[in-house]
Length: 181
Image (tube, rainbow, N blue to C red; front, side, top):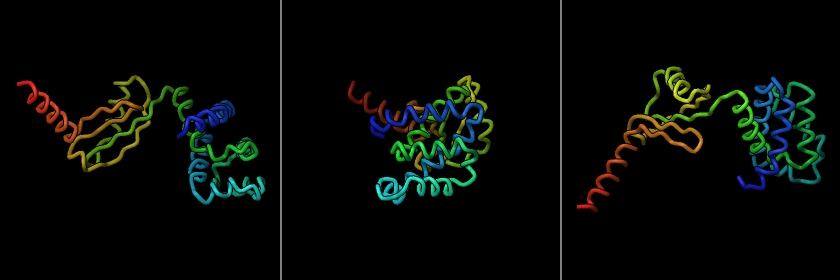
């Protein structure tokens, strides 16, 4: 995402976080849904069309978000984003809100990609929590191209325990060794 979007989204993410208080999960669900709705090309065209009334858009967004719009603060936030012309930044607002929430809750987001379905994700989550000293929010995906094992993505850090990764390491080692007879 462009730096400009990041910068423009920041005050809204912070405002949502401050408004959320202890109700962070509900706000997170709302912002996630807004981000998904706004990512739709047709919705983006509607948001950018000056002929479309903000009250109509607000009603449409509230309807699309359904039960995630659970109180007046949520409705006011949707209206604020529309009136400020910032609704298209909802995906970035959500991303930044989640960073603030995780930091406040001493939680880290981890993505685990394994070659095959994992038997016990709870045990892996527990091991990662012990290693990191923080609560872990873990998502799991499969990628058969790993051949075996798994990769753990923690922000910019990648911990590669895959067979494919080890084969690449071995190839690099052999290549370097081949250059130094």
